[in-house]
Image (cartoon, rainbow, N blue to C red; front, side, top):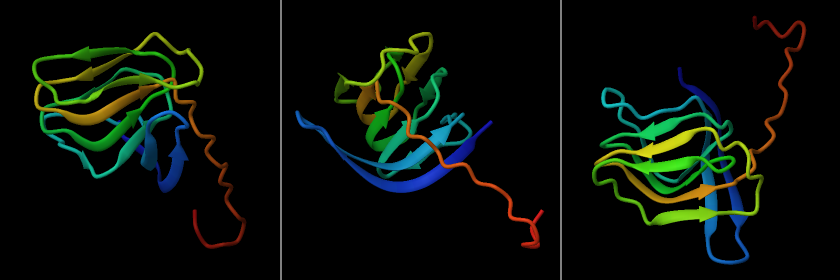
Length: 128
């Protein structure tokens, strides 16, 4: 299941090293062999659940994840490294897998999820 929650351009600056621009925020998102995904920017995941970037999957900037997942490298993915930010350590019970042929700049762990706004239905606007 794939749920796209928001398409944003939010600038975040790290006081130490990286400057990150979040272009896509998603939940239950995956790049599978039959559904190749290319993101020209960064992707922030909002929930701590196992996730894989498969061969041909591309995140041209950074992959931001909550907590401290195990990062598994299968085969020969291309990525520059893993950084832990100052966010919450939990959750820790999931795995981020980078498979052969995947391309990600940095994996940034311990990035606290952004709060998503609550959208309510206005009565009488003609939409169900």
